[in-house]
Image (cartoon, rainbow, N blue to C red; front, side):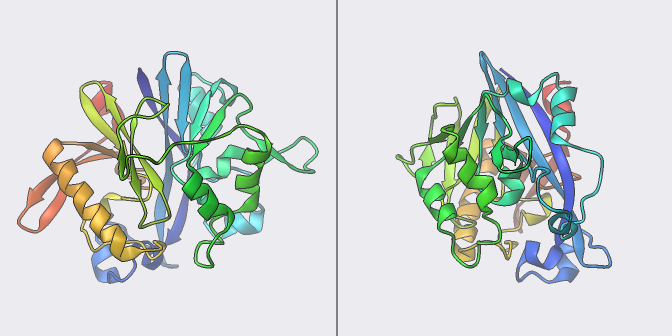
Length: 287
């Protein structure tokens, strides 16, 4: 097995929305905001080369939305999904599986593209199988008012129409120790129904792809929960349990949305679990 971090682009989100009820005077210490109260975000994916399989975890926003849409998110930087795949030595047509932690647009938008004449949509990875779970799929295709703007039809339905959509079984909840893709999954319901958090055994370490259970290193304190979460009190419980386990078992946490911290480890302190160290992927796994 070989793993590659994939940078799919950078954007900005409202800092208050990203930290919910936490005062700006606190969250801005780790995630400083610009004059519009926007904080820097990454769309960091993970590519797993394992035998004949090439598995991509999440796909970023993609490129098919309108200029007006992207204008809300202040895109910045030079990273792109195709550019990062090429840097790793691959093309999107090489991808055999796309695993989607959940179907919010900043995690799955890159899974679908326009067709040649822009009369409709098609999967952006023509040779890949796409993986979600049935409970989350039903949640996303019949969205509640709170999440409706995050579940975009054009990002979701073309996957089903293509015949390339597959469901991960959600038995043995909350943790499925093994999947068809060779890694374990923690199912978390606070952010959205049945978000999937991959746990990957790699080079003697446990690498956890954090998705939106822990968007940035600044979100480590347990009460620091996004305003986007549908069930914030449930997130607090899920997060507290996970952070305790991650500190005790020395997990390496791969942060999807933190532009400055690629991987962190945790430690127990008298103030609760806190960041122990921050690393680049290459420092830990390719040095």
